[in-house]
Length: 278
Image (cartoon, rainbow, N blue to C red; front, side):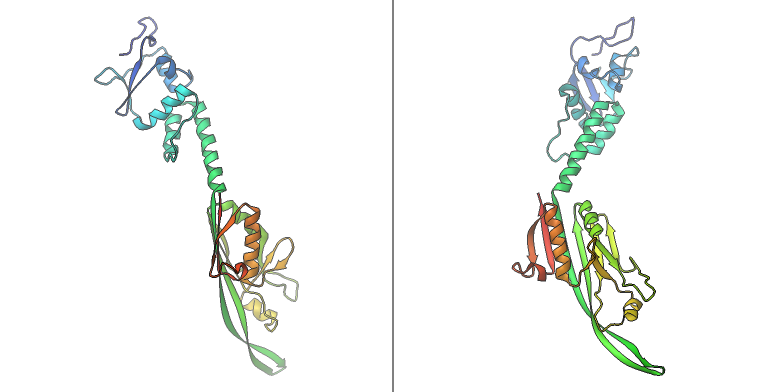
């Protein structure tokens, strides 16, 4: 039962205080509830207006999530955020802490969220796949004012798909890679006209090195692009070149190789690499 000073209306400290929070019953002390006077609990139990609502057992009733209040009450008791391993209701806890206006608890929740985010980024998985398609192109070559020859050539088109649980790694890798079309006769250069996408945890690139026997005009006509490493400007002309760049960047960021497909003994001629970071 709650006792009040009839002159001030404030709760009189004397024995445990019983609470009913969303159907969950808790017993604590007035000292614990008023640890932070500026909080809502501090105002309710140490202010001039007594708590108005009680359940059938005389316990003060708060219409909030009863299960989550356990962690709020423990924070008031211990002065630290103490959550079980794998706790998955942090957003709910943040809302409840905001309702009770316990600023120190909100700060601890923010720190915990940042630590968990750092942990997720540090413990990461990276998967890189490269596919190659050989295309046969037909084009005409002008031999004279009214003379044309039909020519053909093969061009290798590469498609790379990457997935990483650390989205920052893909942004870092993307900063190293540039898809460009060679300059035309006027020195003009197209950038980003080929498929080149980074979305959250996925990255997709397509490029096609220009064969020596394919005229520049025909190469640009088909909107092919070269893939280069910046700032060196080195062109990546094969899947092995691309995977080598991924490998070097991943190792610098603390990843290690977990699997290689199809031949574990031949990294740069593989089609798929999987990395992990702990």
